[in-house]
Image 1 (cartoon, rainbow over the protein chains, first blue to last red):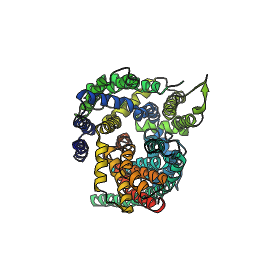
Image 2 (image 1 turned 180 degrees about the vertical axis):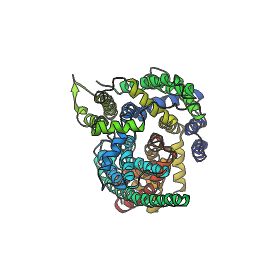
Image 3 (image 1 turned 120 degrees about the vertical axis):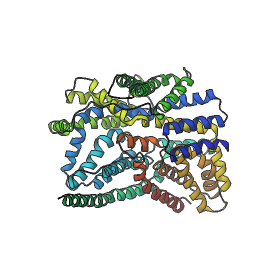
Image 4 (image 1 turned 90 degrees about the vertical axis):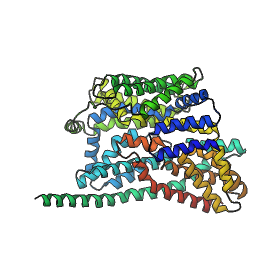
Length: 236
Length: 322
């Protein structure tokens, strides 16, 4: 039971907003020692963990080219391009992105989109560009909201698309675990089929919330502008 | 055969080059700490190749990881003033190059797709061209390198230092968030060997009442959700909850359809991934990458969706799996 203190460290650390790296470091050391590992073994666990999980950091390889393109106006061009499609609002654009991300993941293309490669250089400037065309310069709070929702469209699309694909990690994990532990013969295809209902729900629910974002933006920005005009009139 | 390790070395090497730039960047008040942090990550990336094959001890790397965590965690890292173009220059450049600017950006996914679908099956001299099991990582890496070459030719940019400097600015902006996903993966492994999973499994079984199908479904799905939030990864929660409730109770006792129960259970876990800072590479890293002030912005945007989808999963399982 005492090893669960490590979990508690994590929960308290995040709740009190300590630096996450320190929280995780302390929780790892505490759990390892409470779980009966020697200090050397705990160090080795950190080393093995770093070495074994380098794949999650490999997206850094795309940063130089994205940085180069941004220097030459990639984000500005993304805004200019989206400005030509008058019907494409922020919410509609993000719902479209969600759908593409989901379909991409469902056919196994999980690395075709992503936060570093697609969301920062393309999706965010397009989503912001659509709102800017309608309302002009966005206030800081609204900009944060549009960016948060852009990130969410990528995540929801990936998570609830990829399980429809047979060869994805989670499907193989399920079949691997169950077939070896319980001696059954589950096929990846059966599992992938059962991921479809949730994938449809995810698209409907999050797509609807993205479309509703348009109305929220309208409400926030129109009142913001009313305030601005009122302030200007008061100043006069 | 093209190996994944080559790209880890490339990433490590570029971190080392960027670290040396950081140390000499006088516009950064914390240049030595910043350089040390990224230099250690870069060296760690390369050293890891031998740790993975057990040819080098993991302890020194572990110590280095803890030093990195302290450097970033106690505020010894910072960022310099990025050397970049002005908004006016960027707008002028956007007008000049137009939609051609998208070509290198779209090269990355195009190459990644080609590798995942086509090159995956190619062999050269009886060996697969791409290392088996690493095709998607290789696709991303090859795509990034090809895109860089295409971009530099198209923009007539001859100095390799320009993209390296731009990449470095993005790294400095992300700061400690960059190391967090790897740290959390490590924590998951430590939880595993220390028996945290077993303990949670025992707790769940102890509080679960017998002979109530609907309560058992809710416990399995909500358990996947909650445990994924703690571990940051549905893969870590799955074996625990399935051994505790999913297999013995839902499939064994209530005769559920195994494929449906397990697939939907995993998806209930994914709902938890949407709302936890522990899933750093999906929630915290994007917040840093998009330069958000609120590092929980993406989580707040996802919270209602995650809650509704958890309900959907419980319903779908209750309606169709039994």
